[in-house]
Length: 248
Image (tube, rainbow, N blue to C red):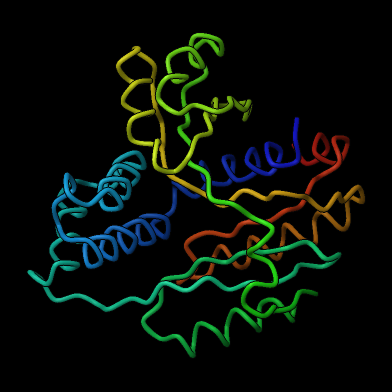
């Protein structure tokens, strides 16, 4: 399993646990609101909103809650003007971090992110110092009942580039612009889609084979991810197979 796939497996498992918490709902609703503010409230004319709307539905956010978020974004209801910021930093051992946030107070959030990093052996980096090590890719997660070869065949003409085994689901990778068409093709083939979105994928990774070091990095990422303003955390850590097995 590649370094990226191993990290994706950890994120997927954590995401499944997070789904039990109201904090995940709050993050998803914030993403819907921002997408509506930036591109309008019509999902058919706003691909970002369509993606965020579907992501919220995939995670069982009630439809009326999503619709209210759209109205706050378009100004039909009173809402908050969130800023989208990506902080770049390092975890212990030189592991790169990209931290996506949505905030209504840039100074407060920046200070809190810096504090979390420095208190846990990390550091904040200058813009551009880390982002060049990542590229944005689209993904569609599909239930394990699907056959891997049939899944790839269903998506190959709609942008599918690779199928990754995340143990509990298949993850089909694509260009971000192909996600919606890819999801539709997979669903039309009768396969269960559990989630679709885009993410930052490392173009090179930092191998870590010490269990203690891995736990230190993962603890920092979890602390960052638990921050109310943080939407996602991406890393280029490549966890040793034996350590990965022990974590499982």
